[in-house]
Length: 337
Image 1: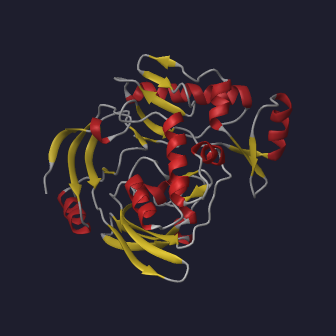
Image 2: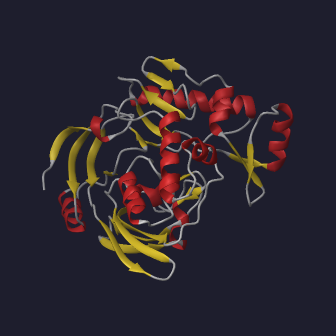
């Protein structure tokens, strides 16, 4: 176990923001995590870091950063319909998706190329192109930091919502997710109706639909419209797509006929946050090295040496302008530290 003081986190967050941790270490097992928590017992300030793809550092960490490096992919059960697969929380998410494609385990192909590690997937209830983690989730194992014990959470226990779970709400910062288990189909149920997947499949000349083809279509779409964080610092979608009442949508639609809304089961309507931001003139905006991406207004970027504070201030200005123009409050999807 190696503990490093004043450790730079720049290469450990996809925004590539310069910030430092007072103390930094990593763990590959639950036992190593327990040992680190014991060593740092005098501090309540523990930031558990995964892939660093959903965090914006606006300051240095005056405490401990513990990086989750628990890896491994294991098929532990199967029945007539499903394979049950257990994955270490420190496993790269896209690498896991590609492993599923290679083994013909269906269900996560629409979630290809999402940055970050597997442990964050249930925490955020990540989703894309009509699929969310809750659709393939089986259970997870998490370690309670204060009580020093492992707890299992099933589907209902996680209280999944739109980019939400119990780990972002009631149990925020209380647990460390160690392993996540998924229920993946033996016979795929293709989901191609969302976004531009069908159009991309036609462009690719796909004659026979497969999970590999859908995965590649998603990769093509994401590569074309989203910046590569290894080239331009970003954390993907910075804001959630807001949900508003149907009556409010009707009023806005009459004033802005090109506004797109997706009806939800609860009677609300989901709006495209990127469209709202673009209508306020932010798409392609740049101030120093902080900016709003030229192809996707939902993505805030660090063009080189922006500080986390500069990106945060820009995000606040974007929120204010959307609220003034449309009366709609955007909620940040990225965790602010």
